[in-house]
Length: 192
Image (cartoon, rainbow, N blue to C red):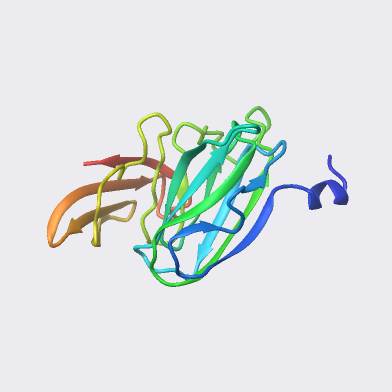
């Protein structure tokens, strides 16, 4: 158990999103120590906003894409194999705030009911703005897809379908299935 001083030293950021493309905060990122999970929340931006979460190893100059945060959402990501984290605005849609905090997640002792492992899919949950899954090995579900509009349909109380368009032409469709109507836990995300 960490004392109050220890918990104050853990990974924790609050970064204004000023409505410009580029790195938020320090281009060197912020060090994450023993944290294995990142809980983030993006507020105030529009639905087409895209912020990339990047990780870097100590003594390396290379940044690696962890996931892309679409719009104003909240979620969790696996950061267990990185020493530094930073955020890069790829698509501007308004201004807001990104807050994030690191946590030590022990799979053997928990992470909530259900006991499922979210590391393979970097589960992102949130409001009815796109929830995305970053599969780490193959990129995210929209890897390389450019779009200027997306539309949402709700075929059932546990399924959301996001259709992405560029100049009115359908580019990709993503289906998100939740375990129940609360939409707190993603069962499956796939490109259809």
